[in-house]
Amino acid sequence: MAPNPMKQSANSTTTTIANKEILVRETMRISANLASPPQPPPPSPIVGIICCEEMDGRRWKYLAESDGFGGFKKNSFLPVSLNSNHPRDPLHEVLSFVTSYVVPEGFPDSVTPSYVPYMTWRALKHFFGGAMGVFTTQTLLSSVGVCRNRAAPGAVAINWILKDGAGRVGKMLFARQGKKFDYDLKQLRFTGDLLMELGAGVELATAAVPHLFLPLACAANVLKNVAAVTSTSTRTPIYKAFAKGENIGDVTAKGECVGNIADLLGTGLSILIAKRNPSLVTTFSLLSCGYILSSYREVKSVVLHTLNCGRFSVAVEHFLMTGQVPTLQEGNMNENIFSFPWKDRPVVLGSRIKEAFQDPSAYVAIEPLFDRERYIVTFNPSKHKVYAVLKDQAKSDDILKAAFHAHVLFFSLMKSLNENKASSLKQREDLSNMTHTVADIEARIAGTCKTVADSYGCFKNKAKEQVIKQ
Image (cartoon, rainbow, N blue to C red):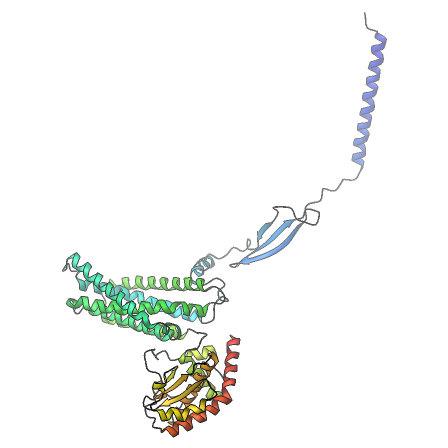
């Protein structure tokens, strides 16, 4: 059956009309869009500064993008350096690297003010010590025959082992000093450095008498090992005095690093000097003077926060003279470093009765003066010392009061000898010229009892004030 032409023409007309209508509508829409004003772009995310940070001289600011609902987008925390336009000086970078090894974190706020002078003198001491080590080792090797091929290797090894073994024995024997390492650590530290120098001198002496190498080397190693025990035992209390807070480990590590660096520098310098074959006596004398001076200044710069006999004596004497208790710095600076622990002292705390009293009549005469106290203070003319005997009920405050009373009596006796309190140490600590009867001693002690009753409370309160100020 043939298609109807009239029907096809009608369909074609309808399709054309529909296409024209779509074209008109699209043209009108485009015209409307062109006539309308431009739409604003979508809002950008809000970026805000969260915080700022500074570390080791560098500064950053932290930014974050807002999520549009009062919060922040995840993973949008962005650090932005504030030093990008100002790069750090390379010298400053080097200094920062070095200080990270030689000073504690948070320096100088993390340590006490006495830390810097102490480490300065300590570094100088290790510098001289490292320099001397090269010459002493060279001398020992020469004396034992290594450099001249005069001894068999086996004999050299045996001599060296015996030398080291003798040093270890000396180290063990000196360890019995015990608590003296705690309360007389300055004196022992300086004593150890003197023994170290003496040991180095004995090692150099082997060059003059090489046939006495073994006994001299053993003696020198004993001295140096005793010095090593002293240095090790007093190191922690000294570093503890510098630490603020719980950073003693950091202070110790950086302090040892400073010592090692100075030791290496001194060793390098001495190697250069040794190549020119200088005079051993002259070189050793100069290095020893520098070592001992540095050691003395190192110990004097330490400010300990506790009282030992020496610092307590300084505090009591200053209080009796001025009515004020010295600061911790003043007390430490005036402490006598040369008052070695094994030296007899004029004031003995916690002694036995038989040591304090030479006869029963003295005890019977003096004991009633201390009925209300938990201690007895007296002077023994035969031993020229002031003694403080503690009773069995004595507490910590009674012990402190007994020590105060004993020192008051000591300075009262010295005043009776018409000695100036600013005289030399030997004069101040010499009571051998005292000649008093029991009655005289009793009268003197009775006078000090009144002084102590009036002033001990004031002394203790002022001492507490000085501790609070630190």
